[in-house]
Length: 448
Image (tube, rainbow, N blue to C red; front, top):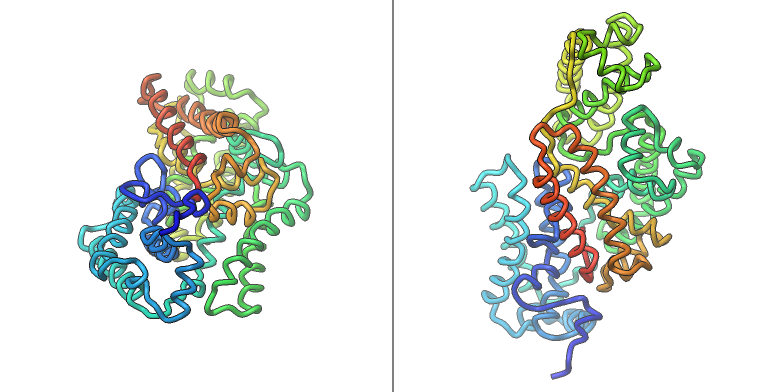
């Protein structure tokens, strides 16, 4: 039997390594963040991503090239016959790997029940069974969820603009919290930035469209137009917040509230330190702003409402009544804060996982910017088995240090307001995150 070119395929057989190929998730890789675009995990995306690798996985099991497997499938063979295993043996191996990805993702899903999880696994197993027993199976045509492609691209916009502007991610987010827009921070005109961002996305959409069994030119053009409009809105929105979920408005609101002191300082043309000194002396933010209670409340809620409206566009549970209630409750909280004498916002609970997951979801986009390559080109190279290190043009240490420094600045910034802060805790978080980054960037064929 001939030797399979493992390096070319980006495949390693056995144990955890097999999971890298079939779903790309195991402890240390950070697969959860890639799929958990919201607080409730998108299991459909996990299943679809795993199923898209079935042919390659069977090729690895059978020690045959993908092209050979596909040729045999075109001649009417099925994956069970080509695997050299029985149907149940192949099904068990494929289902076990998929279930590992599902279980790992479920750790971050507080809403999932055991029964729902078992149903997802059962449905996925049935699909696998159908696929592997189908003579002439063709995985090149499938249902394409363009929303997943677009959301993945959107999640990396802040990091991408930071790379364009040669600014740290933490600096970009601080300036966004102060009301700046991505256009202002990019150093480009709105049309120039929009063109760069949509060109990269459109290539990814076109690549996916090649395998869309329901493809029409009109459909893809509409997808591109809608995505371009979303990007245009995002990059021109002052105070844009790119937190992605289904949809945790509390995080959006808390982030906005954490910037109130700085915002009032800017209104009053006073340093944050001076504002905090006066607050400690018993003053309120209304008194320090130079505005009336209603004027200050209107300015602060307008900025927050813009972020809420933007997030609501991706909220699967959106209703106008829900958003109106959220805005009303948030306005009440702001009203209480700005009228409270001696208000102190310096200490709160910090969720470092959200910060880390947000960074991990933007790694490919960040490397795209570093390497000055198109997003689709980088993803194609990853699919061919290349690693982010190879794609970046840097060595392992250089790329690792850049990505870790980028993340650590955000962690240090968050730690300043962590009421449970200890140096040991922060060092451990940084060390764990650095290890995840090291594993990701050195993994051939990495999938986010």
